[in-house]
Length: 101
Image (cartoon, rainbow, N blue to C red; front, side):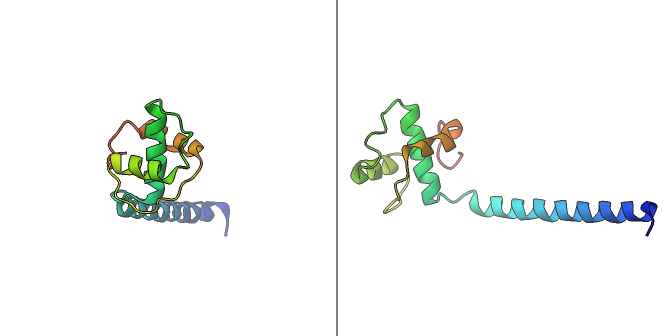
């Protein structure tokens, strides 16, 4: 195969791969976007607390953290508690309501 016949084939393969990757991402985003998972709830709650100027020294107090989760609209039980630095993940979106963020 010379160079002139290889180029269209490679372009087709690259375009097909990009299309498949985009469709996979779009399907994943559409499926998971409306669901408030436990990881999102934790990151969002930490970020909201940090933006409100609250200290995160009570972050490992389960009763306190569960209360804050309910306060921000999450009805999740036994939320795992990760380090407060997790607040950085959603800091840019924490001013939005949970479903929008």
